[in-house]
Length: 375
Image 1 (cartoon, rainbow, N blue to C red):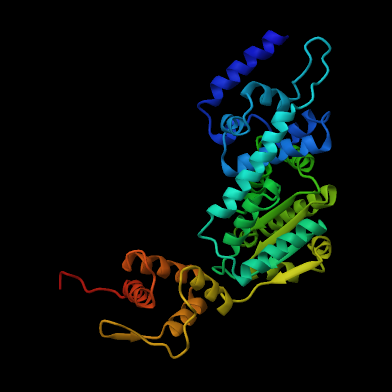
Image 2: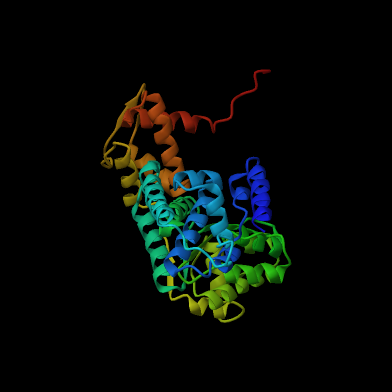
């Protein structure tokens, strides 16, 4: 029996060398929960947290073992529930050094993520989005989050997913035109189970994998109403309601005004059960606020401009305040951050209002059609 296990482990190790980081974890979350049932609650949670964090951050199984300073074979056996006394068949406990290594790994990696995401700026709108996630996670209820495109929703949601709750808050972006099977595949992959199964089996495995201390962050839900049939859209939301009822996990249900409109129209109809479970319903501003823009400017070394401030670039005079207001109204936050990026390039690493205005003039000029050189 021992020789058979060793042979299987050698084959798995050989195969893992050529696999993607996710595929190198030859486990699914529902299987991990089943196979580690003999361990304490704290030990089981550590194993789950490390698994979820690694598949989210694309850390291969072998690399994880190196980071926790424990051998590949033993860690694999523990995850499979095969770390047993060869004589009695009784499960060994998880070694103390491995437990310490896992705790240190999660703490170190989370700190690295927080410090390493220098592009992210915690704007007032981002703080509201973080609050929505906290409310959903703490209350264990669905939270509806509505807001237009290009105000930083997705950036804030992915940042929260990466830096909070040790991987127990998977970010799930809904893809268009994939039908109910594609929807279930997206959910399955996000929570660490194989999508290669029958529809009912996938739903059952998701329910076994998800626990009440997790948070499912579902973004771009309006894509379902835009690109799927009405039946598919309602069926997908009903599946979410069913998962919530049976697991008690928190959910953030995020989309644009199209998602809000569809939910509000059906709140006394097909979607009544899901809508009534969501106590918190948060509507974000229609465009980036002055506070959002000021936070981004400050993070890049610029003070928010006065209304009457004028900057001249060559023979053109512009008012930065009016540029920012128009960009926030018409194009969103990304249009401002891209001008800051290009301004830094023009300023050889330094952002000033002169380089910002120059960047805006250059980008705006690209919209003007040029004459044919054949004329």
